[in-house]
Length: 124
Image (cartoon, rainbow, N blue to C red):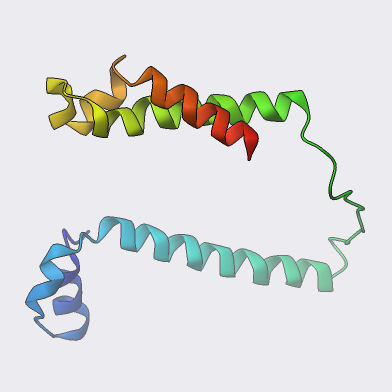
């Protein structure tokens, strides 16, 4: 695995563009592998459908129903976590804030930001 795109482009294309040193390649190559897997899966499912191994069926989805209480609760919990941890990371004066991984895995956070984002996500 290449540490950044500079080395990948140097080995693959023979160019040495210095600005590519600032772009880590792990996420790039993970994204490329997901795209390749999705394309392969799509072609394979179409092939199986052409062989009559898989068959399609129609489903009706009702659009416009209000959210159920369970959906609102899930959205609130997700919003609370986002507000408590991620917004709390930027608002915190804790020494843990200098290391984001330690802060996210700790119990530190911002309860008001968590409540605000929870209510906001549930309202959406």
